[in-house]
Image (tube, rainbow over all chains, first blue to last red; front, side, top):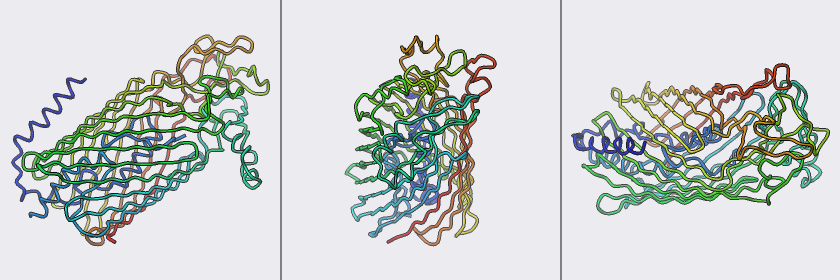
Amino acid sequence: MRCKCIIAALALLSLSACSTVKPWERDLLAKPHMALDADPLQTAFDDHIYFSKEASSGGRGFGGGGCGCN
Amino acid sequence: MQLKDKQLGKRLALATGALLGGVQAQAGDSDWLVSSAVLVYSESDDRVQAVEPVLNLRRDFNDESSLNLRVVYDALTGSSPNGAMAANIAQTFTSASAAARLAGADEDEQNQYEGRGSYTIAPGDLPLDSSFEDTRTTLSLGWSKPLNSGYTLNLGGAYSSEGDFTSMSVNGAIARDFNNKATTLSLGLNLESDTSTPNGGVPAALSTYAQRSTAGTEDTKQVVDLMLGVTQVINRRWLMQFNFGLSESSGYHNDPYKILTVADSGNLITDPYDNENYLYLMESRPEDRQKISLFWQNKVAVGADDAIDVGYRYMTDDWGVNSHTLDLTYHWALTEHLYLEPHYRYYTQTAANFWLPFLATGEDVTVTGSDVTALVDSASSDPRLAAFSANTLGLKVGVPLRKDEEMSLRLEYYQQQDENSLKDVAAGSNLDGQSQFAELSASWIQLGYTFRW
């Protein structure tokens, strides 16, 4: 498992070597809806709901917490 | 173009902002960006209902640093499964939490709680504790500051308080841009300390429900999270993020109000300490938990104004829970001032290795006279630790009014499906034919308004 993670991370890093997107070509990526977390409040609501109903949390950010969720 | 590049650079650098609770980069304006929203959450069968308003204030400063403040208030009411199994005979419960609440209540509150300290569940119904009621307030703070040599520092903290639970956390992350800001690497650390002060005291693990043995009035849990993230611009239309997270928590993980039914060949047993009620034991979970998560997200621009968002998460822990989450959203811009976002999420998890729908005598517990001895170290019937899958369908309608001003309305529907194999019960017994997992369905509406102030 650990080995696979390192390989995946290295594979992603290697992508940087072939990225040829110039700054002036980033018009689409700069639009608000293209943000990785375009609506942080929505993300926070959903993370909290799923944290309180499922055994998994985190991934995008630090997982859950701040809730007794009884 | 330069401004757009700057915006993107900040977004990439602040990918770590996501680690700190979703701070989003904005242009460097000198006033506050106010994001407000209210969530109304409702579970079917009169289970948990919640109303949750939130206010987020963000300010960007001339030195490209930014400050983020958030206040969340959560009001919860309704019924929560107490952990006992449905049976073909009536079951009566007197919850420690309700009894403690009644003991400390004034006259008005006693009237309000009348009849809720003790409750009887009809044959075939899921045992729900209707005394569930809580409010929660969370304050969080985040600060981001670009440093020299392409580094960005993020620091944050959060405080959360509810009637029987308090949580405090601090976090920090450092991000570094490479390759003309096409690549961002980030490393984040979160430290959290939680304190549980259950109504009626901390129940002794696997003690009988009727005995009410307690192990003090409070217990604590410490959590350390570590996260490594990579954000990569693949091409003009494709942005990708990959996170690897490690989490270690130690201390009190129990739900202090959850119990388990004890059954002998599927039949309920009279509690040796309370002849009028059946035997239930308080749940017990391991004191340590280690989790590993992998998260992969892709944002792909479609045409000039649309986008696909595809996310996948794998999580595994040493409790035996393995989960997969797939999340799909399409941003569909109908006009400059109207967009739709259909959303689908699929989730599946395996059960924790100590999840049991009930405790069977001879197998999980022995009962000899008034001597009740658990044969297992840990046991919980909490449906959150069971095997299930879940589907969420949602739709958001957004109305961008001008730059940094938007109204939105979102509706989501969530449905769980039981994936557990049935634990054996004798034919014709009290538990025969009864559901061993209560599938949850819930829906929520979110109304949001963002503006500059």
